[in-house]
Length: 280
Image (tube, rainbow, N blue to C red; front, top):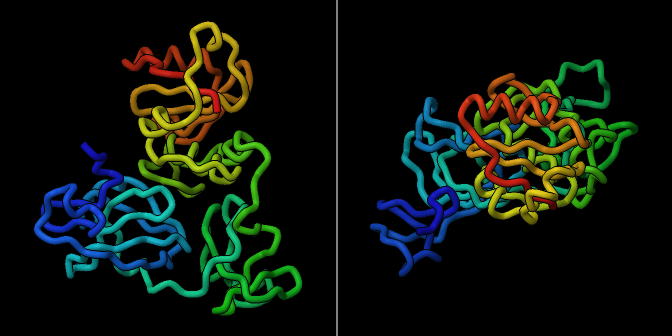
């Protein structure tokens, strides 16, 4: 059975490329759109109070297969293949191709070349923008929006240490399905940190557990290294060093650095055992 989180198929409609593989009333080619809001929720159902499964960030491409006529579009994210419902208002026909990505945790968007101007909004790490020119310390989009140049990198820019990226999120609030410093969950932290270092990564912790790295033996697990991933059922943490991990978790409702042994005991007390430790 194909994972429904990654398969654009419902009884009513499915992607054309799935014809003959799944059952659906109709099959459509789909149309590519661009996320134009800073952060767009990807929900399980077409309703503002439905579960947020993940998020799409500005500049991401999304293939839309269906609309409900009430402000929601159903499609698949270009980055990690996740399928869900997005607000129609967050989407537009693709504009100029992105040239840069936000490498700061967050950055501000100004209407002109001055930090004294009231910002138009903010963008999270990983958001993609098209830069037409530079204006002193600013990078300027085709729309005339000014972003601080030092907060941007080229699309192929790679952070040297994904764990250091995760550490920058310390203090960010925990948010189910979140992928930014405004709110992030455990697997979102892993995905965004690895993406910053140029490593593709599935979205959810179970996908990450089955798809990333190699599993450590019991003997190897006694000597954890920076960048190892510890998996529980429904949770993942990143090893910082021999004694600590960094993870976004609902116990602290934040991204925190925690003593590894303390965390393992706490999580075990809550009813969950480690299912695997992976090394990338």
